[in-house]
Structures are given as structure tokens and as C-alpha cells.
Length: 65
Image (cartoon, rainbow, N blue to C red; front, top):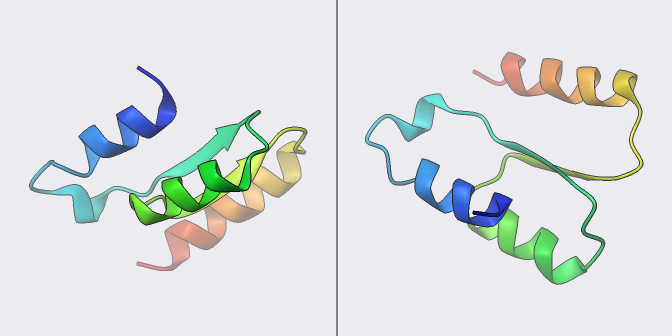
């Protein structure tokens, strides 16, 4: 299962609104980004990324509630 398949499965759960999904990937294709966001990813980051940036984005997602 790849990340897009996992995202699709997560979004079928009845309490899926309580889940935040940030995709971390090596995929660079813009179509993959669009597809992930259409499937409900809350954020999407491509490699290389820095730990500080990941932490800041996670903090932003948790403060959205």
C-alpha cells in the first residue's frame, strides 16, 4: 500500500474528521500533490525537508482544531 492508498483508507473511517494527515514523500510529481489534497490530506511535504519545518507544520495543524 502506498501513501495515497493509506490516505484513502483513513478517510473512510467514521471518525476521520478527528485525524490530521500530513503526507511526507519523495514524490515530486504535481499530480501526486493534487491527488493527495483531493483525497483529504491536510498538508503535503516533499523530500528533502527539515525537522523544524515538519514540527512547525504539525503544530499549525494541531492548532486548527
